[in-house]
Length: 149
Image (tube, rainbow, N blue to C red; front, side, top):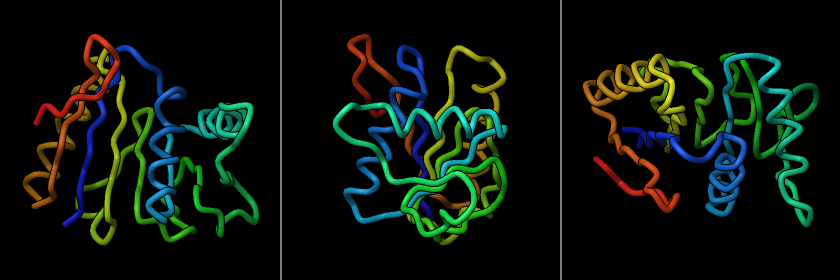
């Protein structure tokens, strides 16, 4: 059974939330694959992970020889770094059965986008029906993450 965490963005952006979640993933000794919906979005996230903080960066790769990096960015189905965690961002999708064997799958979606919200709800339902442990997190008015279900 894979643990699924759904992060409902309302106040923060993906670019501000993703680096912190990836840092926590690496602190656990896990590798992560981040799947975005387009190559342009992968390139934007690649740039963000190099520059999000002046004093550090997240070791990652988006193409080429980076399959051994702890964080892999892609717009495809590939998981070349054998991750424990799959992040689905910007509408990237997978099937509930495809996450078997992962420790965790993190779905980050824009709650202000009705299509993204509907997709997240459908994936929540399919994942729960497949027997995965699903958790829903939403930002409070103060910007902190609160567990909703």
